[in-house]
Figure 1 (cartoon, rainbow, N blue to C red):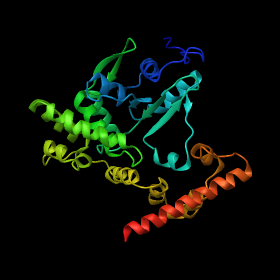
Figure 2: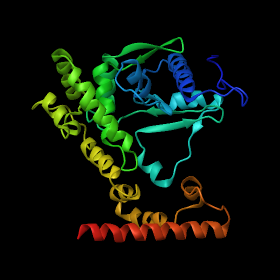
Figure 3: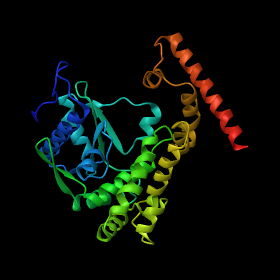
Figure 4: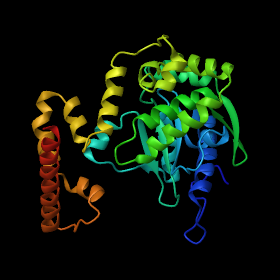
Length: 308
């Protein structure tokens, strides 16, 4: 791999997603090193390296960047062809903890995190904990920083807890973590996990899982202002039929009428991202909005019927 370029393959020599992830991680390592920005890889690659998660290949590379450093990384990757992925209106308002970058010649995305939902200690304090207990792994021949095993378990558990009702994989991964990983931890490893949960402020989110509650005990971690409310909003969104409900919940009162209208009658931009059957003409967009309004009405009636 050439670390000063962005395109590792041509259309006749395509990378697999796994290869793209490793090369992207190496590219990120070189980028943050040149910028003197601290960062650690999280989720997919570390979980595999630490023999925690099996049976799943990530579609992206996740990098936790120290607060204030993400913009520098984005600017450095832009000349190499990495740009922010288009997002719907609710996606832009909800995904405030990370930015997704994509490249037309790479099979994977890059997710740059400046925060992670459920780490209630807050971005600054949580990152310092991850950095203090970091480890090194080799990726595509490059040494990369990753969280220690206990921190990786915490991040994996939080990610699984906020999976949506349309993503059963998250529930399966939480079951794998609870049934396969936690029982194999030694007493020293359980104590280390408890310490990391508390230091990161993840005690309240993870206490809803009995196996984690047993490990945590009655210990309490730091909590940044508004962090718990933000976490509860993320979890609530996972069980809602549409992310617009969270957007409306968090919006200022003056914004809500306009947002309700946008939810019922999406913009052309949102339709292009969400409706795979869209015929992108004025009439086609009207038809798409009509189909959407009909689906929302049916869901509303079903919800009312279930609530009786």
